[in-house]
Length: 329
Image 1 (spheres, rainbow, N blue to C red):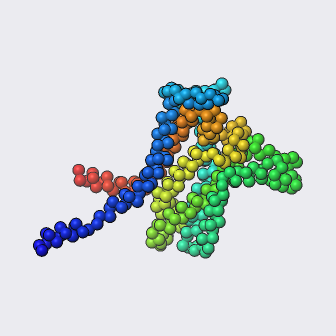
Image 2: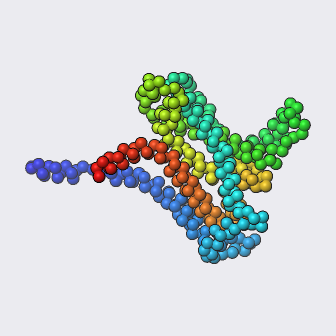
Image 3: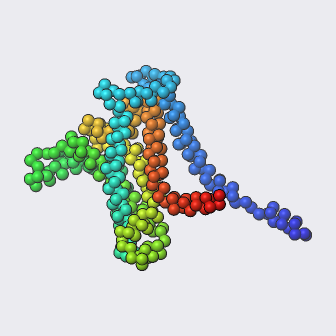
């Protein structure tokens, strides 16, 4: 048998395993198309229609074009555009919880992964800081509502210790309500962020830290010159996912304020606004328009965060490439 015939027979007997990769990921794409992509397309489609319940009478669906979007950005009798007001509420609530979340998570991640300190029992601490994330947000909100109510333990402690003469209504003040929501979001998510950042730091080559230490860099310089730049891809991922979750904030303020966003709807979020249309008037067209706007806001803010923060770890790679291209020309 010639060499060509043997190689031909070998190719016939060999099995190509490349197709199995596509077969294994096929269920994901099927589930994504059926349960995510199709509903997204239908939401955009329904946002151009009037479709709601008026008592027992069903109105629509009737094509109205961009009327739903125009209505959302039309000022009410008080002269305020509600969707912009609730978008501002959402971003304020997210910012108040996200800033301490990332600061504490960064400090804890560096602390637990420090080879100098060599902290023992990291598994125990990881479990403890992650446990609040396992508690349902609605249960967390009910707990805080009970603690800070007029007859709750916090008011009883303040009165018995002589700090307050009468119960303080924590839910009558914009500052206290927003602070409680931010505190709950911080407690629920800082553990998850800490563990992800720890994984990112542990993936950095240890010799880089040793080289920086030998060169005389202290802990602060090592963090800002070595750890943070190399951790930036993971940090950007955590920040964008936290931003997406913050824009979709619903269960914590919904339960804590009894879906009213009190006081004076200063803690009313975008998804609470969306849920209001779905649960009360069942205006599917307007709900679809709000969903599309939330999607656009999420995409714009996520793109801005990615562009500005990712440039810090892309530039060191891109600049040499540009220099080489310029030299070739």
